[in-house]
Every structure is written in C-alpha cells, then in structure tokens.
Length: 303
Ligand SMILES: NC(=O)c1ccc[n+]([C@@H]2O[C@H](COP(=O)([O-])OP(=O)(O)OC[C@H]3O[C@@H](n4cnc5c(N)ncnc54)[C@H](OP(=O)(O)O)[C@@H]3O)[C@@H](O)[C@H]2O)c1
Image (tube, rainbow, N blue to C red; front, top):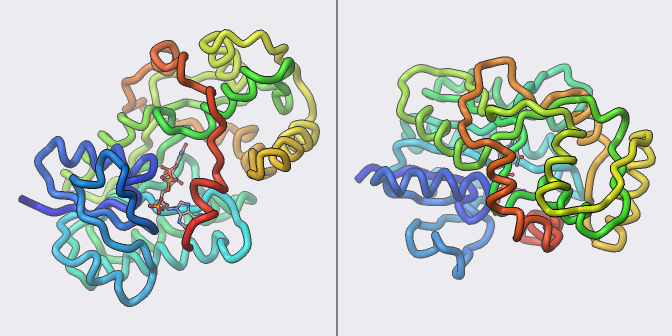
C-alpha cells in the first residue's frame, strides 16, 4: 500500500486530506508538532515530528506524495512569515532528498510576491521555491475554507450569538468564495493523482459579499444582532478588545485588508461542490457555540 505524508493530520485541512487518502486505501504518515492520542485519526496514521531539522529527511522517507498544509496565520514572537518560508523550503529540500515522488502544496488564492500583505507574499514565495525545486508538484490555492473545526466562520457565528451588534469593516461589498474543507481535500488528492505541475484554485460554488456571508451565518444561528458598518480600525479596535478578554488574536489588520481586497475568491470555474448555505443549515446547532482560539490551537504549543 503506498504511503503518503500529510502535515497536520490532527489539525484542520490536513485531517480531511488524510481521511480522503485513507478512504482511497493509501497509508498515511503525519508530520505534526505534537502527538494527539485522543484524535479520531490517532490510531489510523503514523506520526512523526514536524521539526524543520535534520530529522525531516527520515520522517519523509518512503513516502510517495507529500501533502503540505504547513503555514502560520500571523507573526508572533519567533514565529514569522520569513521563518515559515524558510521552513517550507527545508521541507521541500528534505522531500527531494528522501525520494518523495510528488508534492501537493496547499497555498492560498491570489498570492503575489509583490503583495503588501506578508501572508500572501510569503505564500507566493513558497510557491516559487516549490516550482524551482525540480519536484513533481501541484499547488492548490483555497479561498476561505469552511467545515467542522473551522475558525473564521465559527468565530463570526460566536460573535453573532453573543453580541447585540456585529460591525462589518467598510461597506461589506468585498467578496469571498467559501470552499468546504471536504472539497479542498478532494481537490488536493485529485491533484496528487495527476502527473503535471498545475496550479489549481480550490473555491466553492457560491460567491458572496462579506456582508451576505455574515447575514447568512446570522440567519443560520438565529442571531438578532444588528449588522452595522464601520471603518476597519473600529472593527480592529473591537476585535482587539475581545482578544484581550479571550487571550487570542481574533483578527489582524492584514486579514481585514486581505478580506477587503477580495483576495479570497477565484477567477477560475469553481471546483468545490458543497454549498455554503446548506452546510450552515446542517451545522447551525453547533456553529459558534464556543470560541475557537488560534493562539490556543497553534501558538501555545511546542514550536
Ligand atoms: N483555513 C482557511 O480558511 C485557509 C484558507 C486558505 C488557505 N489556507 C491554507 O491552508 C493550509 C492549511 O490551513 P489550516 O487552516 O488547515 O491550518 P492548520 O491545520 O491550523 O495548520 C496546518 C499545519 O501548520 C502547522 N501550524 C499551524 N500554525 C502553526 C504555528 N503557529 N507554528 C508552527 N506550525 C503551525 C500545523 O501544525 P500541527 O500539525 O502541529 O497542528 C499543521 O501541520 C495553510 O497553508 C493555509 O495557509 C487555509
């Protein structure tokens, strides 16, 4: 049975890629910062450390395809985008040395090396490193990924459930094209089966303004919150204050800029099939019941 390596199979997108591979009869090894004994996949996948050092080659040896989801959402302390680019480059070098046949790399929609936003700039730099690596590869660029364990949609729902007012930055007319995590995983696994070196957007069938997205979520969770508009700095001040109480970074300035620049959409035909509003209706009961903390999930753990 062929073995694939997935970074982050106990986390969000990586989990769904790992499940899709297991369903197709592949063996899976995950690279992760921490074993996760209680996780549903814990007994189904091999585990190796996600450490960007000399152990990486051994962790990748024997793998047919590497599915890479590794990235950081924002900079904090020693975690920087420059470091994440260097780590990604180390991962690809190690894959080559270990004899991995192909890499499927999860990027983001609309990355650009001259982007003013370090997240999107770093993603474009990593794509270039992979293109120039000589490895057979596919680059998958998701828009805004929704699904169980999602953070952004869940936390919008959490705010809508608890507060009387939701402040949309700017006029709310900028667009998003949510794609389900299940569709994203399928696109990745299909990209793994190809022989060419494509760049593929993973985007869902619905293109919505941000305001429409918020209103759909509000309706799904039965929120009575007033949806109002305000300058981005007001939204950042509010989420900053909430972040102090929650001990999290709720939203960054760059994320607001990326949203308002409509970067989370695709110009290609949509490959995602799951409808956002249907998913919302099916998951309305659990959505936004508890806040999901990025710092808790991804920063207060071994680096
Ligand atoms: N979520 C979205 O809406 C979205 C949209 C567009 C593109 N993407 C891209 O899709 C990929 C997967 O995103 P995701 O949301 O599914 O991420 P995730 O599961 O939270 O994390 C993916 C991987 O990165 C590692 N990681 C995350 N934060 C880290 C940190 N601060 N320091 C060190 N390692 C860290 C995780 O390590 P562990 O295995 O130890 O957890 C995991 O292996 C990323 O490349 C992201 O840029 C996501």
